[in-house]
Image (cartoon, rainbow, N blue to C red; front, side, top):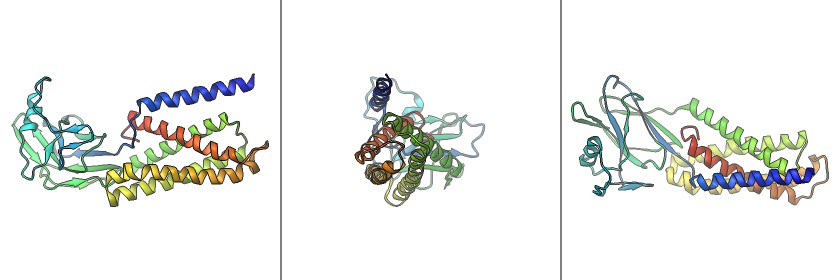
Length: 278
């Protein structure tokens, strides 16, 4: 009876992972946030003008009139940047929030553009900018100047949530493998905390020096594979020593692969639901 319950638990966990996978977008979610200071009491819309004609699913307006477009939208479409930056059909009303957020394939190089419908005026940033971190944050002021404003508190919270989620998921997978015992679980927790620190540090450094596309897409999979391999080596060596019951060495390898696969898939889903934190 107990074996049947454990089997059903594993089936349910894998089914949930597959459902999440079906709804999760493949790839990490880098983002750009722009905070506007000094615009209180004014009505305005914001966008990021892109150096390229597309970024992910966002692209230049092709003139399709099948869907009605607002007057503000068409103002952005008709705007001509002096250096040929493009409006990619994504804008936000920032009058109340005083912040603009682009969380799905933001342009790698961009300019910040504001439109004030009450006065029919535009305000563009003085230069172009790019993604300098996984979650890049800027401050924009009425003189058109822009400064970096990295949110260390939010990044620390995001890391803590990612680490806690990873540990919880991998311990749940450990139950499916009948891996129990305080020493064994402590090993799993310590390994995950250590690899999370290294993974996030490597990702942030890569984005800073090589850009968001390579950092977010090119190296993430390689880092995940390296983490899985490292955990497999450690678990293969120490699981048999720490387990209260006899374990074969291959259990550590299979567990490392399964646990990291499930935690990666769950992480993708959380990034879809909570992009500002993940």
